Every structure is written in structure tokens, then in C-alpha cells.
Amino acid sequence: MSTSRRQFLKMIGASAVIGLGGISAFEILQPGQFEASQLSKNPEALVGKRWGMVIDMKKLDNETMQKCIDACHRIHNVPNIDNPKEEIKWIWPETFEHAFPGMESKYMSEEIEHMQFLVLCNQCDNPPCVRVCPTKATFKRADGIVMMDMHRCIGCRFCMAACPFGARSFNWRNPRPFIKEENREYPTRMKGVVEKCTLCYERLAKGLKPACVEESNGALIFGDLDDPNSEIRKVLREHYTIRRKSELGTEPSIYYII
Image 1 (spheres, one colour):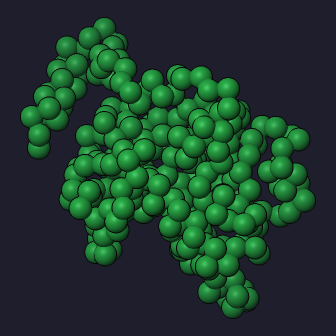
Image 2 (cartoon, helix red, strand yellow):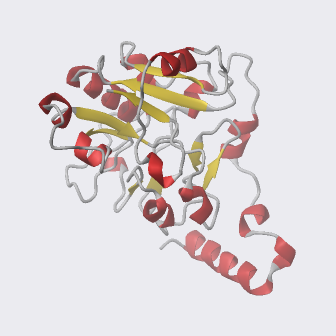
């Protein structure tokens, strides 16, 4: 454990003991570059009240799915670690059985049963990961994006235990040597922190849609769920969709057409 991290943990413990008049350790910290990026105003930025995504599995073949994964992991410096116990995933393929447990049946078509589904952080309306994070490294923006501030993450992994979708990865080792080609416009991470998809918030700030959406050839539809005139709302009106583990009440914002 680094000295700075040890000091930070001590500070959290001290705040819990002396109370600090209701002031949290988070509020003691000075706002950093991460928050500054949230506050910056760019007239070109995409603005929405509740971002969501529809994944049309009827249009998404395996080749396009891999392009979506590659684009996401390339621009976000996601390391390529072969060991499944240490791998880092922001967006990945999953079987129906694992993506939608409890929804399978013995009469299901073989096509659906063996299909690979593209899964990622569900950007829940009611995210349990936010509630359990002791440092507020995980927080939810006003537009619904569930963020991950790696500078505040202390590696407790409470968020991983709380997420019912397994959408977070822990850096058991320094990920930097496993990055094939570093994108210097996006930060790398370090050993001992959790990371996940943040719905390309940095691209939205530039007026760009998420990288996976751009690569999907129309199979992924991104938009404002609160806007009744948006394309995503039109798609949701015209198609029956399902969500992952909706029975848990987290209100995922990722919808699937199957």
C-alpha cells in the first residue's frame, strides 16, 4: 500500500471517530481534475437528462460486436490480460444464460440460446454500487451516468460486491504493461483500483457518441430516455425489449431487442 493511500485510509478512520460535524472525508478533499472536467462547458457537448442505450441483437453480429469491444478498450487503455482471474473488462460478450439468468427456458430457440450478447455497465437508475462506496469514488451524474473516479478508489471492492452484473474489474496488478497501444488522451490506471464503463462521458463532452455506438453500424442506439422525441424512445416504443435482472429494482438503462 502506498503512503498516500495509507494516509487517506487513516483520514477516513479519523473522520468516523471524531464525527467532523457530518463532513465526510470526500468533502475534505479538494476538487480535482476529474471534477473540473465535469464542470466544464462545451457548447458542442451532447446533453441529456437520462442517457440510455438499446442493443439490437438482430443487427449485431459477432464481428461487429468485437469491433465495439476493441474500440472501447483501445480508447480507454483497457489492458489485455490473458488470465481470466485478472482480466479487465469494460464491455464484453456473454451468453443468454449468464446475461439473463432465470429468463431461459427449455423451449428457447437454439439461436438465442447460443447467441453472444454484448454486456456492459447498466448505468442503473438505482445503482447499489454508489450506495456502498465509502469514498464516493463511484457516483452518479445528473444525466444518469454512473462514474468511476480511480483517484478516489481505495480498492475496497465494495462496489464489485454490490453490482449484480459483474460489470466492474479490479486491477490485481499494474495494468500499464498490458496496454497494447496507449491512448494518451485518456488516463491509465494503477494496481489496486476498480474500473468500469463510464458510457464514454469524455466523448459526450466533445459532442461524440460512445465509441461502441459508433462502431455498431446502427445496432446500438444511444440517446436521452427522458426525451419522448429521441430516437431511443422511438425504438423503445416500436420494439419489445428486455433488461438484465430487472427484477432486482436497480433500473438498468441498457435495453435489448432480441
